[in-house]
Image (cartoon, rainbow, N blue to C red):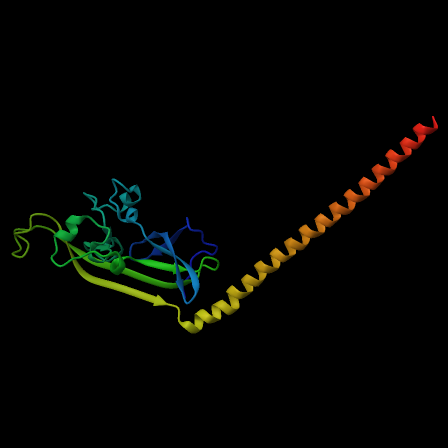
Length: 232
């Protein structure tokens, strides 16, 4: 299976390199979820990732030669022979400009159906459930010389491919993970707390013993001084 960096925290970003885009993308923590009684951190794509370059300067390097693209589109043609006008987006242009959705009939963006996410066990970073959802679009521009595009008055991004790659750990593998990783971790944590408790108890006993000795010694000194004073 796949994995992220270990010891994930809830404010961690998980970076993933995407060869189709020739760049790294990241997913942000969203929530804790449970799969086969294993607590996982869900990370999903942020809308910031798809923002146009005027909002997210990281996307400026991926603008076209004469213009930048709208929110929700990431160009992938630069990694292909001939630099075709291809763009990646979330399915149904989820997290994209509303005009992209309005330009094509039948699109209905839905987070539960169209968001990309991965669920990783925070200590090991092992991904136990994931959905990689993407859409490939081709840019169609107005051209009076072509009959099917002469009535188009602005750029249209036409979806040509929708992919939903998914994976999930099975029950047998989950049980093995719990017995070989999670249970020893619980025992180790319990052992460390036990050792800490014993250490604190020993410290308290030592303090009590020294305090008692100090008190008795001080009492003897006071008694001796009192006797000497009587003699005088």
